[in-house]
Length: 321
Image 1 (cartoon, helix red, strand yellow):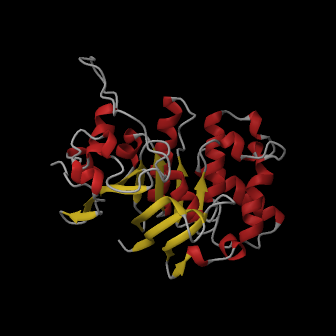
Image 2 (cartoon, one colour):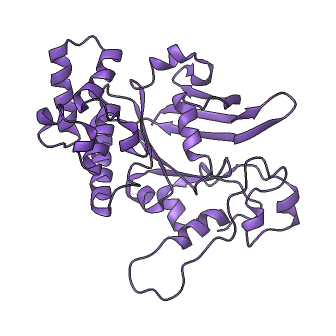
Image 3 (cartoon, one colour):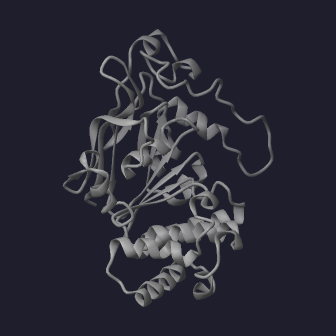
């Protein structure tokens, strides 16, 4: 598969020439055509900021410092907002975490779906309505024609999330970024949404970036996994490789912390401590203070993201095998 998106040595943060604080530090990865890539880690690890960087939706005080986000022949970090608007929603779309705050409560579902078509197409009013019904059918919304005339608060959480996916899919994007798309939903609806996204990837030949803290979601939906910690990529592997033998102690800790079906024979594993504050770790491995394998080398020297075993990558002085 050819590379569709290539993030290379991306650095994002705030400050000036004298002092710049990095939220994302040398983040690199690729997304290939038609594949599903999971970006996983605890809250505060930089997952959502990575997605916002790709979408060109950085908060007002945050800026690109170095690196590139290559989409085809275009570096997205170099585009103006007007130029980015032509790509955002058309070639790259995003489903946000909470549909109730992402959908405008003052407008009907039909009004909000129509916006994408109005901006990125020359369809007539009747054609927009037909396309809107078509895309709602695609995401399995029942009675789609009737749903166009209702407001977000009239729908269940699962249907609102389907509408968000429909808006993102309206213009047939090449990449869909899903930021914790099942967090606020019960487990039955979660499974339905994940099945839907899997099916859409196959039928639409679309790449998916799944932003999540849930390793179960990664196992269910993704081909490849990227583990982030404190603004850095610390491990990358196929899902099968990662679950069979995690190389980084943090990845292993995440897996041991996940509850398992069956009889509980012992307490769940807990990773001690919390993710460090942005900019608080100036040298060494950012996971060192929480790592049971940490040595003086880990605290003094910063490990680089090294490649092992046919494109598998890990950032650790004492990689586990």
